[in-house]
Image (spheres, rainbow, N blue to C red):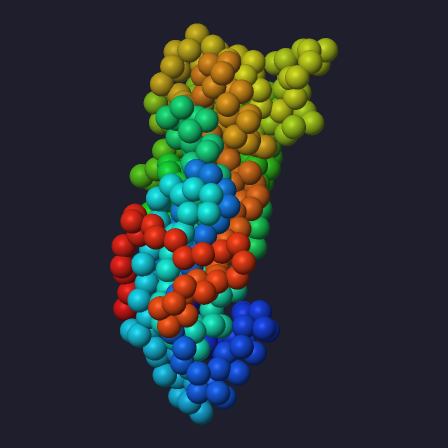
Length: 354
C-alpha cells in the first residue's frame, strides 16, 4: 500500500527527514561514484518484543531507495535484497530482524527513517500485547488518539492492531488494515445536553445506528446512579456503560474515608455490576478507562473485577523499543564495528518489497 503522499516521498528522497551525516555520506559516495555493496543488519535490545513496521520499511525502501540525476529520481529499490521477519513476530534481544543488501549509496539516507518506523511501531505493538496478556482474554481498546501528535495515528493504529487490540478509535487508526473505529459517548455530548447523561444516550441511540451503544456514566460522579438511569431509559438498546472517573475523584457511591477508592477501582466496578444485575440489567456490559496501564489491568484481573473490556490510552504510546543498524558485510566480506557481527537468522525470509 502507499503510506505517503507525493510531497512526503519527495522529501524522503531528498533527505529532509534524515540525519545530516547520512545525507553527507550519500553525497560523498555519489561524488566518488562509489557503489560498494554492503549488508545492513537491524536489531533491537528487548526480549519478547512484538515486531512491527516491517511492511512500512519495505514501502520506504521501494519509494526511497535510489539517487538523483539532476532533477530526475532514479529508483534503485530493485537492486536491493531484503531478508526480514514479519510484522507480529516475537523477537528477542539482539536478534537480527532484517538484512538489507545492496549499494549503500542507494539507501544511506534512509537509516533515520527505517529505524524510527521500527522503533515506534514495535513499541506500540509490544505495549498493546503486554496489556492484552494482562487482561486475560478480555478486549483491550486502543484509545491513544489524544496522547501524541495526530500524524502518528495511522501507524500507531496499525501497530495496535498487530499487537492484538480489539478496536481503535479513529478512522486514521483503522486505515491501514480496513478496520472500523469504535467509540462511546464523550463527556462533551453530555455537557451540551445540560449535563444529562440520559439525554445524551438517547440522542446517540436516535442518530447513530449499527453500533453498540455504550454510555459514559461518570459525568455526575455517580456511576451507579447514572448506569441505572441510562439502563432504565434505553433498556435492551444499551449494550454497555463505561466508567472513566478521574484519578483524583471518589465516586459518590464510595465512602470518602476508604483508602484507594480514587478513580475507577475494582470496588466501584463491583457496585455498578451488582446494581445493574439486581435491577434486571445483567445484559449491560462494563468497560473501564482512565489511566489504565499493564499493572493496573493486572491488578483488576487479580481481584477478579467484573470488567468486560479495557480502554487504554497513553500507556500504549509511551516507552521505547529502540533499533540499531550496522553494516556487517562489505562486498560480501564480513566487516563490522567492534562488538557487532553478521548473524544468520533462519526465521528471516527474502522479501524485496518491489
